[in-house]
Image (cartoon, rainbow, N blue to C red; front, top):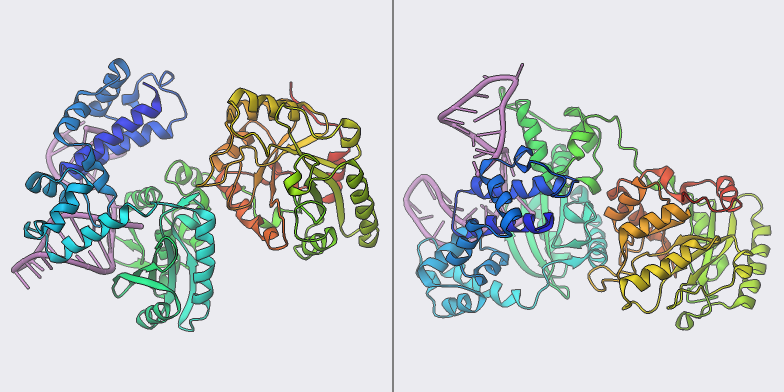
Length: 577
DNA sequence: GCCGTTTTCGGCCCGACTGTTTTCAGTCG
């Protein structure tokens, strides 16, 4: 059994114990053991004694050893016999946790969604102690919705909803300030619901205004300090609004940004210092005095930590590392000097080169690269050699009018053909300032074939960057099969950079992989791949995704000022063979 | 079940809301 399988087995044990209504601390002990393995970078073979890891004790170590030696666990096997598998799926239903499910299973013989539904219809559920008519109705509704609703939605969809909500919040006068929180602020790729923290003196009035102005399908819950609604959108997304006083805003924002594990780590740290963290502030346990903070930065500083960017608050090593730094040296929006991947009307872009350039100047960029598609990508109106020459002439002409303040570089997003050949000869490539290569066709090839194609491109002396290296569309398309370790090694060996495509439907490469790439001294370019002016605005999302991968500015090509970039592209590729 | 330069037993992160109660358990984030 490999590490992944062992982690899964431990988590399964936790779920089964939960369904049996076991001691919650015992349940969390199994989860912590799984987490301890996950947070350790080594493989199972490299970990000599799992029992020595913090969070793994005698009991869980024994289970791990058993799994390693026999491939199964007596405890897990026994639990599986005691509890039918279908019962596990019931934990996904909102309003149902281990305790209630255990009761439904033990007294009514509920073993899956179907039997649960029937028990509700037969009005048996409401007869149970601790259950009632309302609970039965809610469960029935949850069962019916669960079959048609995806659990999580892709970030680009949630960003759009969020912008719509923010437009509404901006118009409510009683709101002093507000912020996104939760997994969207942490930039998770797949998101369950939206969270907003709102500073206001008049929570009830604000709640009323929100209900009035937003397309609400249903009020899920409402109290004095929070309101949960279900939007009237395609998927019925739920949104939590949390109302706090202005002074509590920073701690509330931290609290509701999470993650859960990050918060647990922070609270443990506070506790060890005789303090208690809640959304309302930091309480001194001895005196009962509650301190509030003007910003998250001040909050972190109070604990001797530097500010931890939301994107890395996952509850792993970030809290310990923050204690040793004065600042995380991660990339910020203002480091970005250019966008190296965008399209114009020459291929499938919606705006002219000049219009794209004007928009880039407004953003304060020092230069851009126009990278239209190449001839084989006919659906996108890819350029042949002659059109490339025409385009170069137009770019030269435009550059004359910009003088020294701004420069457009001529590039291409060249297709890597299905057989590994490149769409342009070197004769053509060497006339260009910056060459991007990308796979746009034959996604269903075997991994070996895909890797051959990528290798052909990266070994070409003119190809500087591989765009959207996996071809994925978050939540919709897996992309073609890429051996990521091999890709990163090839990038290192050939001196080719990898893209972090800032489009929220892509974010390709994913954060965990740009982090690996940086560790291997591979350069990253954060590009919008804009096909229209508004898509240039995706850059901050790309930068946030880079922070999620712990990316530092010197790793990123487009943090170079114009002079450095010109020097870079006039120097041959530097591989590390 | 795990953990301990105060602890080998008694803690284990914290609070809001709901629905069921008649003071609180369960769920959620």
